[in-house]
Amino acid sequence: MIARARLITVVATVLAGAVGIISSTQTWLTVVLADGAAHALPVPGAAAIPVLAPLSLAVLALGGALSIVGLVLRYVFGALTVVIAVVLGVLTGQIVLAPPLAAVAATVTTATGLTGTEAVAAMVVGIGTTPWPAVTLVAWIVLLAAGLLALATARRWRGSGRKYSTDAATRASATAGPAASRPHDAIDSWDDLSRGDDPTAR
Image 1 (cartoon, rainbow, N blue to C red):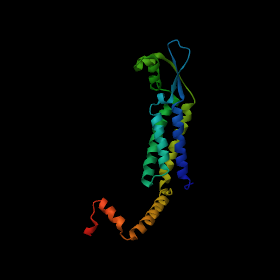
Image 2 (cartoon, one colour):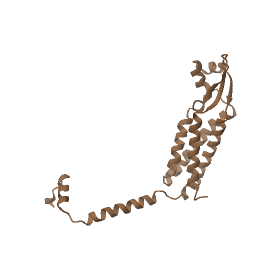
Image 3 (cartoon, rainbow, N blue to C red):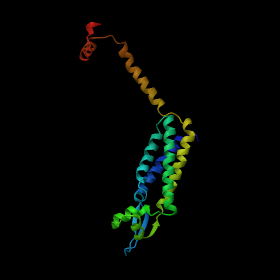
Image 4 (cartoon, rainbow, N blue to C red):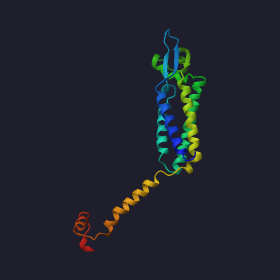
């Protein structure tokens, strides 16, 4: 389980972020207005929760970063993942349980030109929900679990950059070795002159 903790955390985080991005473009709520219109006004997720899209993008970035960062940043990013999951979970949960007027106010204002809480409230007859808020809430619960898993297991993740840094150091030493042992020739003297050094002064 510990050996797969990084993979599970990264995959769960990226999937949750992807669900959030997709969900932000889908209809979360439908609003019936007191204007005699027969159709319901759709409210997308990004309008119901203005921070849904940007925070979902941040979650995607965190998922990618968690796959490569060192120990300290694992804890930092794990904590950020938990905070974002809680914030989005609370906001989404409110809409699932009882959609607040604020979630549809911007859409109603755009459609009718009315502003102000009282004017919007007087125009709204009813608010319905689609399955998308509930689906997205599940994604935030998964994200919270992923963040907690990262915090609990980060110290035991295998370092991803050790192999690459070792290989880079080996290649650098192999390249620098012959150059350091090669005698100083005329080409090197011209290079010294181009840098402003006088080889005759040595």
